[in-house]
Image 1 (tube, rainbow, N blue to C red):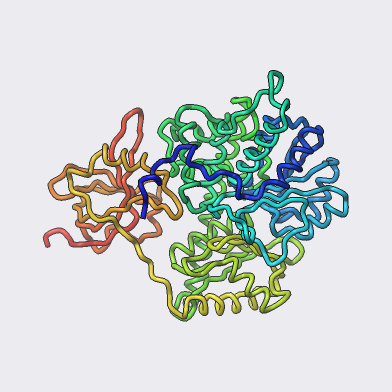
Image 2 (image 1 turned 135 degrees about the horizontal axis):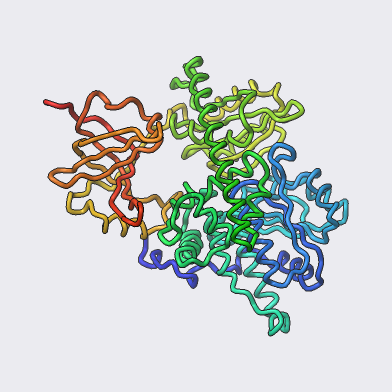
Length: 547
């Protein structure tokens, strides 16, 4: 139940950093910053990793670091995290300190290699730790055993924000560091990056994360945002002055992620780091083109997956509760999206693999409630040593690597483990509604109120309503979206959109001209005007003409 204080999303309500375990980390960073030592940030190739990398570089520079740069792995060449290979590349830049963001908690070999080379490592991460921790100089992770920080849902960029807050306090206490020649920075100026990374990583929006996201959104609405983010809003054809979390989730996040999926996330990080608006726009336009390419690749992979499941209908019967698919032509950077689509459509935990070099498969897993994916993979790894080379992630999403010849054995073990975790019962696809709205409530004002009452997201869902309505008109736009004109009772016509309609079936369903719609309220901004729009989540036919 939401308390009244939960609605206060002011910065003063943020959980203080005291219990996050920052002492060793900020001492390391103080040593590096005040000694003008070389700091190298090692990031991740998703939007959380990109924003965390940009935040670390910008924040450390603002706090006085004179030598700070970043390095990010290439998904296809290097794989995930601080691997020994990445440490070798980092060593070429002769860093005095490596700082991981959004990775590192599972990088036992990489941290060991850094120590062998005499480079201390500060791990900042939010992923669930394994049984053994890396032998790093310091680790900051709210999910460490015994860590007392109340919010376990921080994204990688949120963890880095707290580290910077702790370092600023340490430098403030030092005395003489901040003054006329080095002003103390306002770290809240970087909350636009924190908001984008937090929403894009789909972490639960507990109150602490909602504060971080809302404060970042407020600054973006006021025009206070990094040039790279401003450019991303522009290529996404969205207005930051009206921005909400959904704009990040469906507009900015996919375009930023496209760099890490198809090429190199350095492009995305550089976009976030440049202070030149023209250069930022050029980079954002490249990200836009990559995102279009990603959509085309994804569409082809979805069609192949559908055909694969049709050829193997036993995969979708009540005895097979987990999906595990592989095709040698699938793209490593898109398997995570495909796994999520299949999980949503078939309501089963899903793992999708693509081929990597050297006979390896890299997979991305997505899960449902009551099946914590990372724990499930850990169980499989313990039961069958050597089956999985490496893995890591969250309860709802994880990544893994295995030998190609182990795929069938893994598929069988995965299906068996999911069956046991679900007690042999296929999860039901529930859609929980807040009930119907009257014609008098279906207004632009209501939609605007709901829109700005967020931020809405994972574990803090936007209100969903349902109504019976008459269909006044319909058409398919851009070959994939269904645009409806509907009326509730004697109310006026209302525009309704069912995006990616090809997944929902043929139109009209059973010839119906009356539908039961489950929908969210939205405000459609078009050519300077605003109007109410319903975003259709699901529909069912109620009747046909003449009945």
